[in-house]
Length: 233
Image (tube, rainbow, N blue to C red; front, side):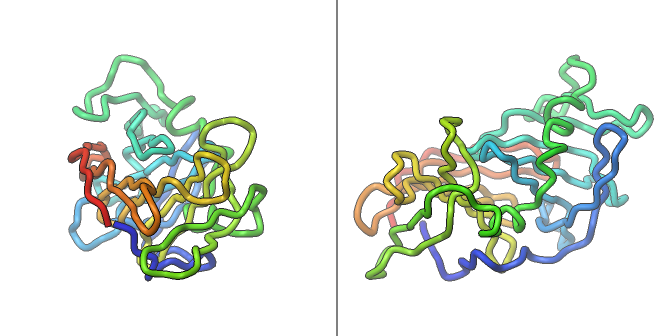
């Protein structure tokens, strides 16, 4: 499962077109780094949040403006979704599985606008200059030395201590390394690939990682778990 061949904590993210995200009347330009519908054109930007989660903004109709927002927790699970209404200028809550409005009214204060202050792309989240936590090392199969991925920048368990490093590889893949027990070693890796596929792996022994969940984000921005595998690598 684990492959560090593309890892570079100083590498900028894969370049794509820009899209405009409107939140509470404010417009932000973000870089589209992921091709969710696999049509050969990037249409999605992922913004990392301080709690270890992320929001994926997708331009579903190709007009240069974000239409769909999907909120992921620190495990890559979908916890909310919203669709932008150009007429009202507001985000409305939708069911992540069906895309239908949930009847909750404006969703601007949750999935979209609650991350207004966290306006940072995945590539900037990996900057060592903003790190405040302990350094995290990753046990890489077939390598004598553990790989230092940098200082933790996000606190996923909300205990007041940063425990996760978020990094972007050369091809735009987002990788989050989490130290769950505070020993300085990564215990979980969450991978969000450029085509929307998600892989979550756990460290289960020396030079051994086990895939515990896989899933994908479809063309409508909805996350669907594929399976709960027990594949070791």
